[in-house]
Image 1 (cartoon, rainbow, N blue to C red):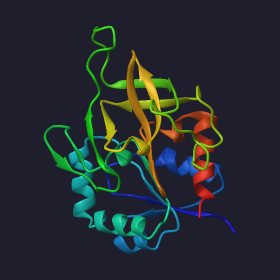
Image 2: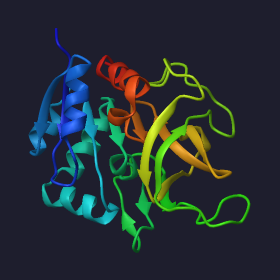
Image 3: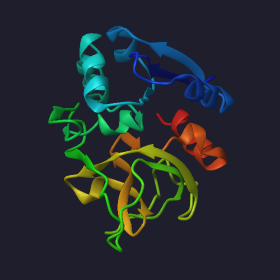
Length: 215
């Protein structure tokens, strides 16, 4: 049976690459902009680009925020991508304080404006960067990253970064001029990637392939 993945379509994300990557990995893709479709999904992807406040406003306007929470509370698998990952947290400091979905404790903060050497660096953080295990330990066994190895490169585009309240929810990091950036978060059935797996070649497709096979 072909695995079915529901992608949330809330008007604030670029869906084409996500859909193509899912189909390439063998999934049947359903686009959902109604609460019922979210609640009844088998697996859910929350993509996103743009500002945190705008993304949350669209989810609330379409009455999708509570169905996403209900879906996750039932133990179903969720994958958040870029802004979608950030909205999984409690709040964001992007252009003021804004409430998120509160699926994983933590907040979204500015990427440090300077590297570890004290020199300013480019914001947003754009381009390929290597994944590493979290600073405080942990590995990728029994996660969507189980087929990956530290050093695999992923494609990033972001100016803000996740700061989980509990370090155990930090799945992967990357180094940006000596500054540690949270590249992925995880809690039980929920995983979020700051990078774009759908734009990250074979390693990114490995994540997507693993996700569509989760129960």
